[in-house]
Image (cartoon, rainbow, N blue to C red; front, side):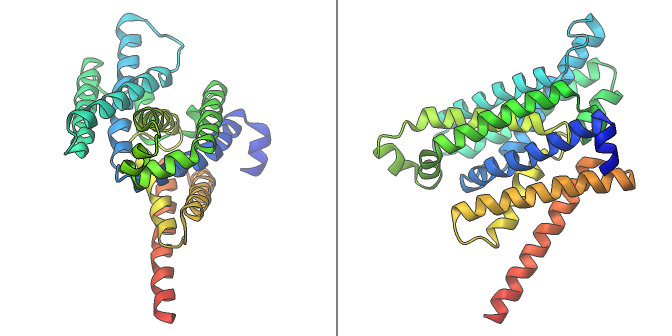
Length: 279
């Protein structure tokens, strides 16, 4: 694969995209897990699927969006879904977790309708469901790189506010932090990263990349910043290792990345138990 990286553009696109996603997904995943919103990735991934299915349906039936990546419509639906989640969290103030399954159900329902209207699955849709190395274009790479830069800068500039808001929202509001605006910014970032990650990992597995590296780092880290660093390290290990392994074994890249993430998590849990017994 090393030699192939210098010869084939699609491998370069997949590898560079994987590097970006391997850092972004766990980075936001730490804040998502701390906020107890782990299922939001599942909800938005299914909404993203609805957007992609809609784009492919319109292209097939009406000839609109021909030659345009369904990634754009997927991102649009994901952002809209994120806004609805935030809105519903305000409606159900004492049961905010209800917002996620409501949007998840809506995403699944819309996906099923659009897919049935398009007369079932096709190769393009399957590549979005489970990830495909060859499907990553240079345009996709530039879009994901722009999203990565935007998200990284936002987290760096708003780190203290996001940290305080994640652990103690009431104190954050009392301190004058614009909680509503920050919630809005954060949810949009999550939506964009989920939509961007689907090319490599696949829609059905994208939540794994956002939560499994975080779950492993929580067992080992001694502080929040260390949790972020370990999460990114585990995420990058899973993505790079998954891409190499899937290339040589001809496995689905998304499934391979998730498998490595699970192995890392199991190793972290085992290491933690051994260390506790020895102390």
